[in-house]
Image 1: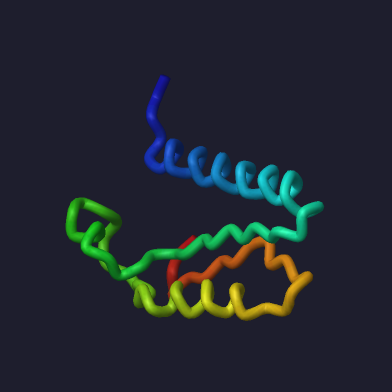
Image 2 (image 1 turned 45 degrees about the vertical axis):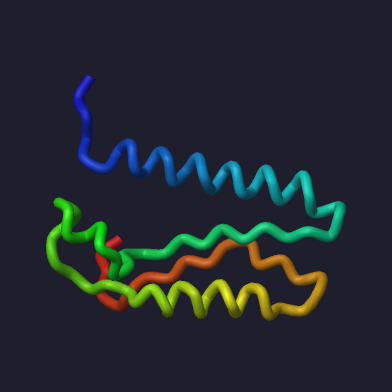
Length: 91
């Protein structure tokens, strides 16, 4: 077994996406929406502890603005997924 950089991270992101979708399917009949917010690199203290090298970062407020937008949608609207990344972030 060889650990490939980022493989565990990618697997956990896929698991969270599957959990969100399954939860959505369970609660949608009750009028509840589920939104998966998938931010790119966000300017948080965690980047100072051996994270990826320099590159563009989102302000935390940019992610909060996306969440506020989702919450402001009219009743009956289910925003399933929001992906927000800083311009220039390599995927």
